[in-house]
Length: 398
Image 1: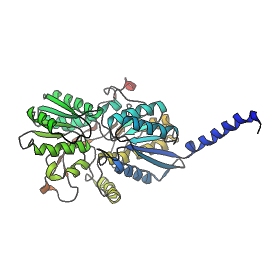
Image 2 (image 1 turned 45 degrees about the vertical axis):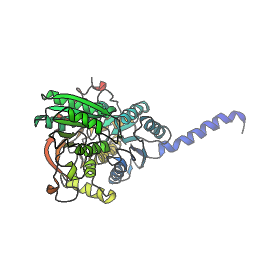
Image 3 (image 1 turned 90 degrees about the vertical axis):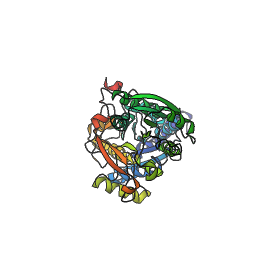
Image 4 (image 1 turned 120 degrees about the horizontal axis):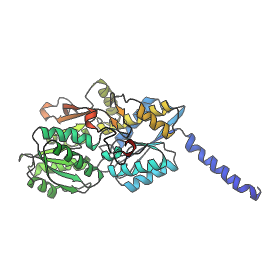
């Protein structure tokens, strides 16, 4: 080979190497906590839900195979960003979803904006994702801190729980949940007496519970999730907090955590979820399939991951391309109608609006079959649960 031909040959090799990433079909990444405090909350079960969505869609879109990859971000934003960057730049991933942990979701959403890639957050809660941190390519699916505050916070204040003390996870999610719930409490005539911030994945909540107990607040708001919530509730029982007349509000509590606690410990808890397996024929049919594959019923994070994955694929098909701008446009145009949400719609800030449900955990004597854990108290309409795009604080909608 002549020396002058070398640069051209190298360039040609580069083009050949680049072909597989663009020709390998549509690639979806599931990035979440698979080994830590949120492993049951989403974890490998969310991955299985995404696989079900791909199978139900038909395993291909636009004549291309649909692939899925997954990784454990260990609740570390820097690790999550590193994985997402490799997925986008090297492995040809087109969309990342689930994204449990708000600090992780905010970091990956910012990277996705830079790389012009779609991210659909399901597991993380902070309302900032479609508020001041919104992006043209970012979407938020199952719930957020504002919706939880409206559902659980609003219901408890109206029922007489007008003084609150918060036990708050010491990162973005906890701050957002405390802030949103505090605003709902005060707007309904209640008062916040104080709060304490608790490191993620704590094992000993005793000093924090004593502060909450001594506040004499009627409601102790648990602005945490996963194992942190279940451990808070278990240790609160040891201090006799509920027996002493105070109520615990699990502000982010799902079926996975209730199952982990058991009905004896969880009975009477009021919570808000966007999905329950035993609501109707569609939810039961999906959940029974999920149970056969995983050995458990899905919570709103796992069911929401199914919905987000399916809707992304519908948007790719409708757009006729996997180009992110075209797909984002279709995601904001198409209605969301599946077993997770009926008549759902995606706002211009990326927020998927759908009804949520206020539940009370049954007493053991009220449960008639395995996983029969909830009784529905109220529907929280989507337009009440979530702010309008204009009121969300998203700069894209101002």
